Amino acid sequence: MKLKLIACLLIIIAGFAVYYNCLNNSFVWDDHILVSENVYINNWSKLPQLFKENIAAGGFEKFNSYRPLQMLTYMLDYSFWKLDVRGYHLTNIILHVLVSLCVFWLVSMLYQKVMLAFLAGLFFALHPMHTEAVAYISGRADSLGALFVLLSLVFYVKYIQLNKISAYFFSLLFFVFALFSRENSLILPFLLLLYYYTFGKKIKIPAFLGVVGVTLTYVLFRIICLKSLMSDIIYSGTLLQRIPGVFIAVFNYIKLLFLPFGLHMEYGQRVFKFTHPDALPGLCIAVVIASYLFLFRRKRGLVFFSLLWFVVTLAPSLNLYPLNAFMAEHWLYLPSIGFFLILSGGIISLYDDAKTKNYAIAFACILILFYSYLTVKQNTYWKDPAALYKRTLRFSPDSVRTYHLLADIYTRTGREEEALELLRKALQLNPTHHYGYNNIGNIYAALKKYPEAIDSYGRAIKIAPNYAGSYNNLGNVHSDTGEWDKAIWAYKKAIELNPNLVAAYNNLANIYNKTGNKEMAAALYRKAIELNPNIPEIHKNLQALHEKN
Image (cartoon, rainbow, N blue to C red; front, side, top):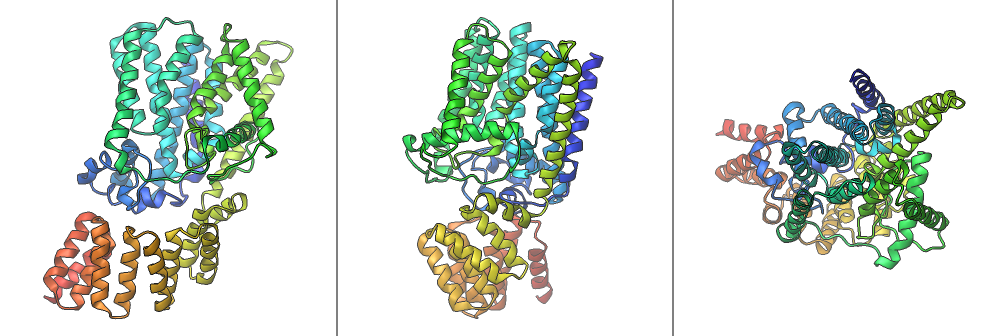
């Protein structure tokens, strides 16, 4: 027991040590939609909305994800830290450390080898591949989902070993939590089958059917109740067209696990041909893995379990069922456990041989230092949003969204011409992207080029007539030019399309305040404050209105 406690303590220290330097990193990418600009997480009265809507609803967007527990953790964070980014990063680090401890717990239960479990948990905590799930606040779904999947599996194994019904209850409970944290948690029944098969356990049919029942209930819930809440994503290619990308992804995943260099966001929805240089190596790797699993299906050793774990947990992310990218580094979060288990097993084998014992110790130490250095360095890329987006564009020059994110930073820092150039590049890549025209309109409005701004907003509205933001921005231009009636119409249209758009209520209230309709202005200010009580400007507007009266 003492050895296990020491192992756990070392994993905790290592996890915090390598991610300490990301505590002050900024909000980036989806962090603004999910956290800093999300009106649901700052008010506990909005708690039911987290379980009724898609993950981005409180940020006035529509994503194809339903993860209420992830949003609940942001709500808890906000209660303690408000918008102090350090609190959110601290939570991410704690979750990652807890997942690393669960890796240790699961492996020690399955194999009764503390050193094997320790190395697997330690390598998991340190590997730079996981920076996307830890240093990125919105990447929390990976660690949260993995935590509950591993806890569910651990308690299910305890139920099988000890026949404690309480352990089975907790297994089902954690499975529900996992499903409400990340969609790929649906693979749990397959991991249970992997456990039964690899360790020669007889399937307890009633217990397993309980897990299957939870799975089917969730699937039906998603299909029947939540389909209208999800966004409609346009996917690239047919199944046959996506298959070369599957092998390319496999090759790159394996390469990045061994040599984690060039890590970056945004791999994109790309369609490849088998002539791509990474397709054949990926196909060879897949054939080797499949052959090994077939040939050693009866021996079912550590490598067999680890490889099958890798395959089962990676399968939902291979774009066979269409996803919004052909690969993503954070999708390796759970599958990487299989890799670390094989790696740890190899080191233990070397250590057990007196001739290679010192080599095993040296290799383990080198890996620990290697992973630690790269993780600390990778965290620095997430520190400065502009640097992160520039780095992403070096690896993914066709990423439309990255151009928009970088352009937004340039706009806010007075570099309007550079921002316009980026947005025009984005529109060349995707001429039907309404955000591009909307953001160009924002720049023209800031430069007081109002005719150009109105034209750009018109183009955005023509492409996406249900996007409230463009109407709100159009209202701002009409307000600046003194066209009150047109401004009022635009703001009302924005509110009609998005009743939670706080800015539109405040802007409309400002118009009514200027035109003498004080009662209506006060009502709109109060509505805006009800939606988001944490915007000082609106409180000041309402206070000034009362003081004048």
